[in-house]
Length: 118
Length: 254
Image (cartoon, rainbow over the protein chains, first blue to last red):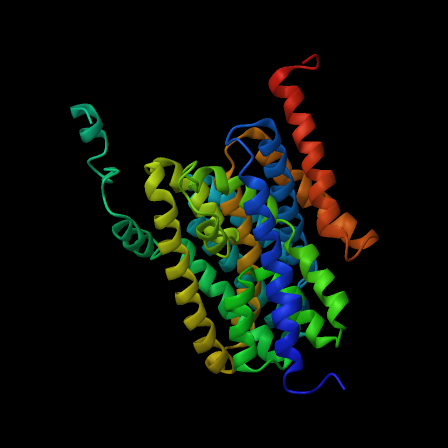
């Protein structure tokens, strides 16, 4: 019933595009009345930042796809290592990303190798 | 413009008389950047997920171009996979996208020229609001003359979206040939990238406190209030961070 060819596209248009862009449009209409340095805007930025931070934690702790096969501690350690390297490298994002990825891939390969040996 | 102004702006020309199409081009060129590279890699990871889920190439590309916010795209993919109805799926995606509203609100006073910028221009520009472009804009736009900010942002957002759109399509066609470890590693790239760039874009202590609080509260709310978790994390965590850091800024009495 929901498998007609147009159904996924209708979902993308309404549940995807509309459900996402409507927030941006509301932001445009509401944001016109805010001052760049006002207290309300500081709060709004805190809300947005905490929300994305929550999503970050979710993506690390409860990932989808192949990544979910790795142990949680390895993902946490890789993210923490990446962030530490980001801070050490004077906040260069690329340093953090590469360090975190290298940590994850090394750990993953080592764990796989260990599993093979046993 | 005084002589000292000129020398200060010798590196990046800040002449407000530069026509806006030049600023659009400059914005487009500045999209050739490390954040764009990282975002592309994250979308390569997404293309793998989309293919695993059974989405067609057209559907994957439509989501990339129309939704243009990776977290919301991932939520919608999950909804399509589990055969969710339109209304529940829309609510789930809307909840995952709420953050775009405060982000747009925070960006707007920066890109708007009071009394001059048309609302439709802002609505158009708002489509490019997503973590990468937002972080880039919050960090770099305030250094530009006010008139240049909107065209620069349009150029940046348009070029970034176009490029990532193409990369996603190519990745969809090629992803099956990637080893599992590489495909999995691409999924972790997004959170590490979000984490570092969000910290880098923080202008006040409050932003960093909000980041830390959100990291802790996010998983807690996910376990106890799945579906509403992001909204709760944002409102409760953001408010806690705001109130706490306000006390630190101004003392308990004011």
